[in-house]
Amino acid sequence: MIDQMLRADLDAPRKQRHTVKRIFERLLDEHSADEISYQMVRGYVATRREEIRVQAGRGVVEAFIPQTHKPGAEAEVDFGDVTVRLAGELVTCYLFAFRLSYSGKAVHRIFASAGQEAFFEGHVHALNVLGGVPTSKG
Image 1 (spheres, rainbow, N blue to C red):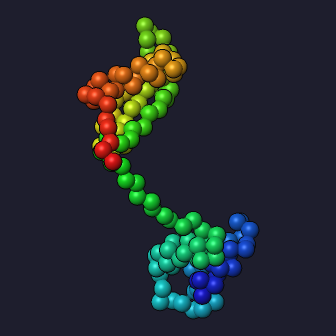
Image 2: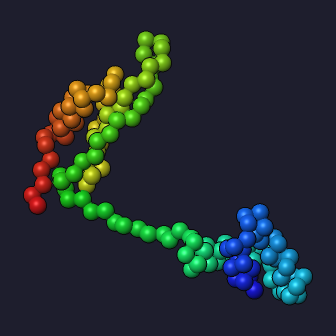
Image 3: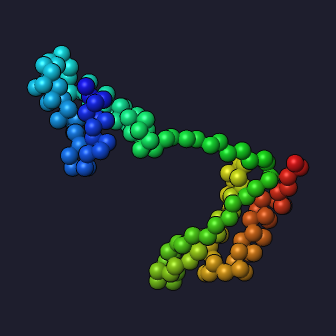
């Protein structure tokens, strides 16, 4: 009975869809379901509502795609805004972040700009801290 209500809600306007409270009330009023509790209905609806949406092709299917990274094969680089207090004034600077994909080891440095010079200097700094250029053997 609950599944029928939830399927009917798929085509109903958002404001007209069944709440858990309304489903529980309908079960009591229309089907004399005195042996069930509100918590039982709430738990069932929490699980089934999304399952029914997925079955109807309207839900979000959860998926997981594992990532694999070989040691030393890849790194990620990015700049992000950061506000610092410099000589008593708030100044926007740029955080250079260099992260090895396999180990997660990261090196950071703050620059006054996110220009090409900062990009190169950030790489040089990170590779010096890491002890060299990571290489992949395959």
